[in-house]
Amino acid sequence: MKTVLFSKKNTQPDPELLALKEELLSAQGDLAQAYHQFDQALDPELVESCVYQISAVKARCNYLIRAIKERSPDTAAAVQVEGNTTWT
Image (cartoon, rainbow, N blue to C red):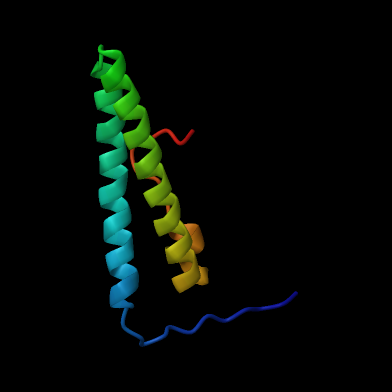
């Protein structure tokens, strides 16, 4: 049986990585808001606008997730969607 020892690194968190994570949390909030607006829209033009907004925010979330993974592959598993956000 192999024993793996993990040593603590005394490195400070990457400020760019932290900024990306904060931006991702903000984008997730924007996505939840866009879905809420979509649910409330009655006019066909507003529905279409909400669909474009949802698509844009999802693209931004996907970009941020890729950027976080590239910046720190060991924390890729730590990127989680908070709340009840639905990815479609």
